[in-house]
Image (tube, rainbow over all chains, first blue to last red; front, top):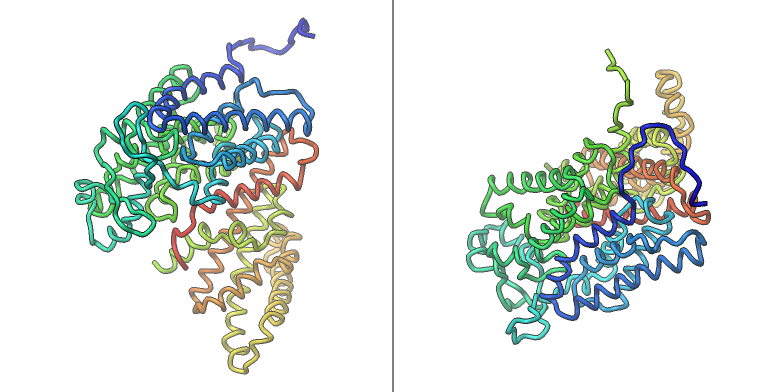
Length: 352
Length: 192
């Protein structure tokens, strides 16, 4: 059957691309962030990543083999990406069985129920993450503080909130005027234990935040490693620039406006760029080709929507972090956006 | 400001369909096509607002003064059902194009639990007439948002090769679940 000629009309343009190539270039792009997570969280990160990837591939294999009975697509790498992204979105202290539940939801419900790769309207890893966050809120928000693999840290498994979580704890104080952002940055964000006592202060200098010296989920901590991977993907044209630029730009402008209005209550937008999962979401999840709009204008609208919803949830929502919700909500908007921004047919004349 | 909070609260935070799970039957029933979904949203906006105003007046000026609170549910159902009929007859006479556009959805709204739910919630929350009206408009906008998003997704899925066992209603329910998960991100945005 391989020798049958493909017959099609012109133009006969061949791009040396396949699903497999695209997927693997995304996986390569995630390697720096993976290494950073191993460095900061040690063997726990290896465990979470391995279990997540193996569980995702296994669930996909079992469903394809026994339920759908179709062609096996586990070799194309899409299940591996979902596994890695799911691991990137959870804390390194998460129990094994919760990760497996997340993998089943990601692959089983958000991907294979729709027919597999290329058909899911929502990003599978994000569905898994949001499902876990809502089902296991305590486990999903207990963040081990980064403890370097080769460092001289004497503490064993300290937990604390993320930068944004600590910031959220201060929202009432900030709005009441008891404390200003300037004071918080100078002193560090207070970290509370279960009883509400201050147990430490979160560092607030850009350098540590950029390198990843903070509590957080596996993949979101080191902005530099994520951007390295993103440059690789942009260079290989695995992702296009429209969604990241629109997303980051709108989030920055939105946060910047409030910062300019009242710098005592709203933190410098640069912190919003480098803390939390924004960079991870912008380059690795919002750009998912399947669940984002097709046309350029549509992608820009999609990016702006993501940025604004993210900042709205961060500023006023109940959750400290809004990236995953924002992308899922805009995924739901994608079909409507696609309808609204259909490219003009070739040869179509302007209506007079 | 108070009214803006009510609108944000009803559209995003406690969306009538995605957070309160009211009005699920039209949500699943008429979401096959984007055009019909838009028509249904328009009809709901109209009926929900009028019905909320009328039921509020009945509660304040008939049920409360005469101590007939126990008749609330049944009187509201009667009012909504007859209101829909009246609206239908008037529309048919006054504006045939709108009547044509709404078509079968107008009578269908009689059985939409979201309408009764909103009318009862307005009484429960002790809103005044203007707040109640804004609340009803907000809820119908929330219904429209959910319905239009859902219809877009379902039209999109029509083109996909969904596994045989999941085609149609099962996958629609999965999508509805994920949509509801996504909207939980707005939790605690505002309180009403």
